[in-house]
Length: 182
Length: 107
Image (cartoon, rainbow over all chains, first blue to last red; front, top):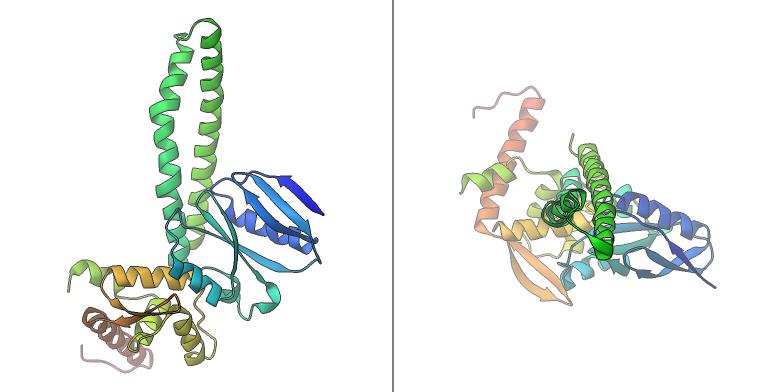
């Protein structure tokens, strides 16, 4: 039996997402399909402890990379907006590093910097160049009539969503970086 | 050698050192991780993402070069620049080791 769940994880929630997917598998739900940005399709299975890991590659994964992950025992099962999803049964893990994609802090920090550069900064640019000017015009009452109401509401909602995302992701990514970069 | 490269790689991370050390012979990522596990009795274990990232960076910076491909796996080998950095690191670690035993080194 298949089960579909909708859950939104931001670009700063990948560690929570890994834990959540592991918990689903422990409860007998194995993910079979990822539909970006927030739909997860599961299939019922024998409960098993399987470690899930996400790597952020934007669009730069190569055949060499995929082969290397496979050599290290990782099964690739999907991607969603720049994130690659891997899993490995916990019983196949011999050491702590075997169950991780990154074994030193330098590479964990690199991942955060990559997300900031290719996702958070573009988000801030869109906010400053499109959302904010539109929101200011809406407040100034420049949009009139029925369509104007729709525009004003649209920019109002976008403003709130963007401010929330930028503040939330910015703070959280900083925290993750600080955890690994003392 | 450029100052920038020296600043990045001296001192090296532990994974970086072992990877460069192993590439004195041509090898691919997974092979290196197995060799490092053997050499250190399992005390040093390098994960997949860290291995891939370090190899890409070292290749970009000219410390290692692509040697040949074997079933989709790229084999790398150390370059002259890589050897130079490795020997700098080995000297630094030797000094560290001697000093830690209470011996003086004449730099």
